[in-house]
Image (cartoon, rainbow, N blue to C red; front, side, top):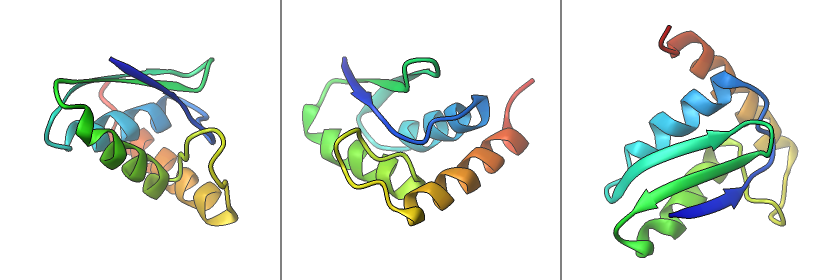
Length: 90
């Protein structure tokens, strides 16, 4: 298991989008999101997918702490958040 601290994580909608996006990556078997700590934990049997996970998070607007957090990242995170809210399971 690998835990990443990310930026722009705001709510359950964000968490839903992150889970859905990361589970679509081959090799990722489980994803959990800690909203209060802004952390994502990824379970994978192949650590080589970690770079792909980090790139996916950044593309969705949730860069890793220490990486650039541009206005584009922030805007994308709002879109991911809204999408996650609309598609969240009850």
